[in-house]
Structures are given as structure tokens and as C-alpha cells.
Image (cartoon, rainbow, N blue to C red; front, top):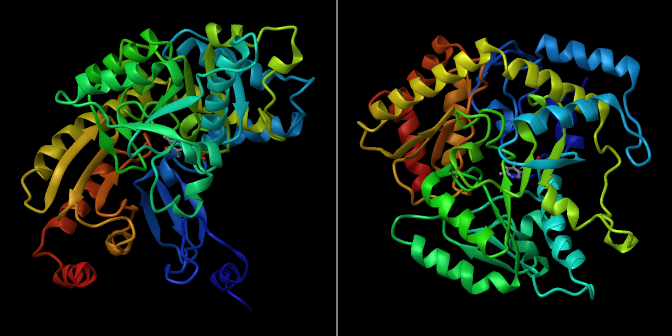
Length: 439
Ligand SMILES: *Cc1c(COP(=O)(O)O)cnc(C)c1O
């Protein structure tokens, strides 16, 4: 009989994975809180929340029960011409907590579609507002090193990289600017003013560029950029697909800024990481440009599974858990332990740029000369798996992003393993392996 691994190899094409050089995937048969359990019974602490989505741990009984009850009631219905309670309740509850004056929720089914929707809304806003259906405000402004997803629009507004190289000439033009620093802020504001006349929208990952290497930047400076954009009639789109729902220590990263976005994108933690769902919320000002008798001004966008009732139910259940005192307290403990841990990390010579934002810790290991394709990441992943921890460094950027239900004991198990990894003398075998790969 073929093993799961053999059948996988025969039939499956995995995301972001080489078909030739990647190690065999590990069949996971069970999730339990922060743990993933494999076929042979090995347990791994999921220290990156399964690609940043899981916030309450795996197979949470409360969320599972709610999904089950909803599945018996209504599993899916077309969302054009019909509506349902889970979508309405979720919109109402999100509206109460979102960072800004939002007035409508548009559903889709993942992070890339949520940013795709936001960019289309931003562009069509100006098209709708022009009486001749032609506008010069057609450009998008984005950060260098940004990541907003893998569909074509989302790829276009993401920085060009090895991942988009094959599609370079199919991606639309975007004005890329640096993230703000005290040195460049004046210049950035100048660039924004310079391009304002032709720019429809500015899309940004607030305070933290995730896939771009967990790079963090300052809230006060970001405030200045958002204000400058809004003063110059540029729609501000906060991509909180990753930073939303407590990740940065507050419910949304945009809460760290005074200036509020006009559009916000959510996914990943939205359903507690149980089901695929995307949300794009916008202010009344955006909505107003679509309030028209002219049918051509309709927002013609949708997906088969828009506002899937099971996914909306999972999101409502996740919000219930997130708003509990016990969850908020544990979240706060993770944040304060993280702050202490980076002070410890800073003592090591082979740790560069140790930083943290809420539940996220990141640092560069040894040097920042190695890019994503270098398999130092794979070496570290394998090393950590042997220690019962799942991590997936971005190149030599090691980061932790645990589910909020992790206990402080479990968190310190992870910290200790990280310390073992960076202590050269502990495991010379591992170091030799890493050195060989670097050379
Ligand atoms: C992951 C991510 C996306 C894309 O979300 P998917 O659900 O993977 O399509 C978009 N923006 C940010 C900031 C992300 O981290």
C-alpha cells in the first residue's frame, strides 16, 4: 500500500515549494491547541500559527461546534440577491471594532482577494467620480519590500521579487517608496505630493512588512504618510491581513496611528485561522462614489464563496474567544515575555536586529547576506522540528508568531530552542551543515 507521503508526491503540488528539491512534506493527522501531531505521533508546537492564521490553537472545540451547528443549518448560499445572519452579524460586529469610520463590509475569500478588492475599489472610486468616465488618478502607491498577495493585482502592488519575476511584464506600474525613517520622511512626503495628481490609492502593511521579512517601522512616521496622502486626495488602504486581530498587541495595527485608513483588508486571523475568508471594509466616502443610478458605476466583483456562512460563523466564534479576558490576558503576557526575550537575544553576536511587535518576534541569524532561496531556512526548520517546534524562517530571518493560547511554559520551550539554535557551541553538526550551505 502506498503511504500518504507517496500519494502526496504523486498527486499534489504544494504552494511556494520546489517540485524537485523540497524535503517530503510531513503528514499531519491532528491539531490540538498549539500542537500539530504527525502520522507517527510526533508533536510540534506551531510557533508560526500555520502561516500566521491560527490565533486560538488548532481544532478549537468552540469554533468547531459553531461551524458544525451552522453546517446543519445553512452551509452556503449565493450572496448576490440573498443574505444571511452570519454575514450580517459579522459585519455589524466588525464595524464596532475596526480602527476607523467604516461603513460597509465587502466579503471575499482570502487575503489576496481582499487586497485585490481594495485596489479595484480605490481605482474605480476615481473612475466613478469623473463625469466622463476617464480619470488621471490611475496609479497606485506602495512600499518597497511589500507583500499583498499572489493574484495579479495583488502581485502588482507588491514589490517585485524573485517570486514575481516570471510575470514582470504583466504587472501594472506602481510607484514604490521606502518605509518611513526619520531621515527620509521629508523626501517621502515630497514624492507623495509630486505623484498625487495621478495617484488613486496608497496600499501599506501597517507597522510590519510580513512576507517581506518581518520588517518593522515607526507608527508616528506612518501617521505623517497617511495624513499626507489623505490631504492630497489619495485613498489609504491598510492591508491588515496579517496584522489584524491582536497580532501586534492591539486588535489592529492601525490603532497605533492617529490617521485612519479609508479601506482596510482582513483575512488570516479573521476566522481564527479555521476557514478561508476575506474582508474589505471601506468608509462612507468610498461608498458614496458607488451610489449611482448609472449601472456602470456598480462594483462588479464577486466570488462563488463570497461571505460563506460557515466561514462567517467561524469568524464570529473567533471574535467571541478573542474578546474574552483570558485570551486578552494571555496575549498581553506573550507581548511582555517577547519584550524581555529580545533583550536576551541581543546578547548574541550572531543575532542581528532583534525586534518585536506584540506577539511577533524577529531577528536575522548570522548575517543578512543570504536571501530566501538559500536553504538556511530549511536547515533551521529541520533542526527545530527535531526539537518539537515548527518554524519557517524567511531566508535567514527567524521569527516567532504563536497562537495566542500558547502557555508561558510552551513559549519558553520555544525561546529555549531558539537560544540553543543560536548558541554556536551547542550543536556543531547543525552549524557545520549551515556553514556548508552558506559557502
Ligand atoms: C498573507 C498576506 C496576504 C495574502 O493573503 P492570502 O490569504 O495568502 O492570499 C496579503 N497581505 C498580507 C499583508 C499578507 O500577510
